[in-house]
Image (cartoon, rainbow, N blue to C red):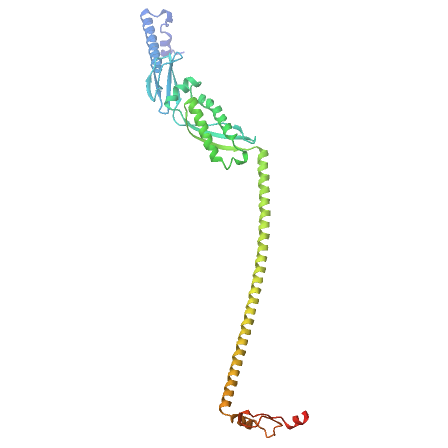
Length: 336
């Protein structure tokens, strides 16, 4: 079998000495290299713990072995601290929104309500250290859990002043009361500035919902009945108005007929008076004419005589004093 020169080369090399048997010079170089690498790593760790950066939305407090070492909160930017013995506690100072879970309150008439409340707030600079080290654990999570019972208590106080049936119509008033009460409490206790409070939802009990539905149905029925009454009253008013109009029309017609009768009678009386006056005037004129002309009477009798002799003669037969009554002969004989 042919020999491989490359295999022979590796097989024939001298064996490597064990580590412990390295020359002293090479052992010293390895230890120094490891020490340098360790020092570099340690320096990196120390330097990385010496600097910290606060973002624009936060401020921070610094403690040294559990003791607060700053009088004012640290603002945004890069800052230096002692490594390992100083701790930085950041807190959000920009506008925050906190949604409370279900909050239960009682109204003035002992009705249970479930509220959904949202709080928009901001931590002022002067309240940072107080919230970090006087209230509880550092951070916004602990702030939210701290202010939650305060909000629930003030909401209970506000709703206890109102009856359930009036909540919808007084919603604006309730919102204003909630804002005032919660803002005062959070400002006084924690220095937090409340920007706005929203009541996201109001959930009533099932019994109250059923009562409201029944009340709405009853009211609808009442309105329906009232509309029927108004309709009947309107129809009755129409009948009365029609009858009244007809009566007034008949009265007006009767008055018109009476006035027409009166006018007609007046006209007839006036006509009779005029005729009588005319006749009297005519007779007077005839009498005057007869007195002035005595022969006119015989002339008139002569014109109207039918040839029959008069049966009766009154007067002396002279002039105007003569008045003759012509009576047919047959009538005169029958009279005798």
